[in-house]
Amino acid sequence: MPKGRRLKIDNIQTCCDESPFNSKVMAETIDLTGDGGVLKTVVRKAKDDAISPSDSLPLVDVHYEGTLAENGEVFDTTHEDNSIFSFEVGQGAVIKAWDIALRTMKVGEIAKITCRPEYAYGSPGSPPEIPANATLIFEVELLACKPRKGSSLGSVSDEKARLEELKKQRELAAATKEEEKKKREEAKAAAAARVQAKLDAKKGKGKGKGK
Image 1 (cartoon, rainbow, N blue to C red):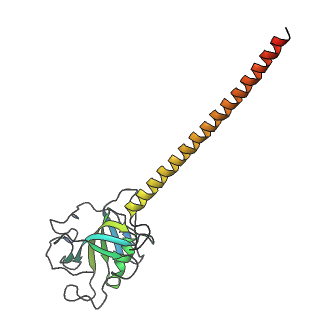
Image 2: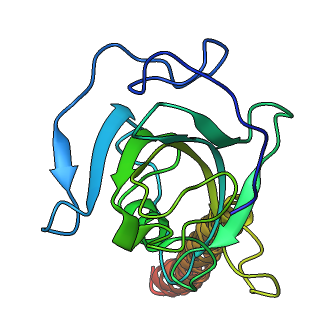
Image 3: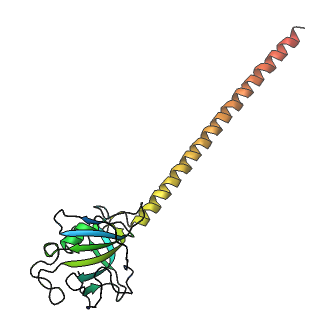
């Protein structure tokens, strides 16, 4: 992950005052790995119908802030320059904890992720910002999930628009088909009426001759 300038904060449970991640009410903490290595706490829930990273939507955009659990020091943040960090989930582009945690998040969700060294930078650390065997705390906001570049989907919004257009085309085709069916039935009824009129006319003439 990219490295940023260090900032000092007083409370490791929240980020700096300007951060949108400030939250005094924390939800239940979930052990994502079963060994306490990656803990996740939802700070802000996403909408129920929000999407999550998947094999078809592996590219994600996030805002985040990382602190050292030992002293609450911010070692990296996207909020200083309001930048967006993008990567592909599950490809080892980030630490293990992120690959694990991001798959459980939905777009719009903000979560606090606590990761032990074996799921972060391990015994080497990442000097000078991250010391050896450091437990890290991240607060991450998932902004978007997208397909890989070159995918025929283009984007989630494009796919929704495509499906909506397809739905409209199907509805139009169904309406056209129904209209054509109605016209055929009307033409058939008109033809039958003409035949019946001719038969009635012949019957009328026959009666006249027999008088």
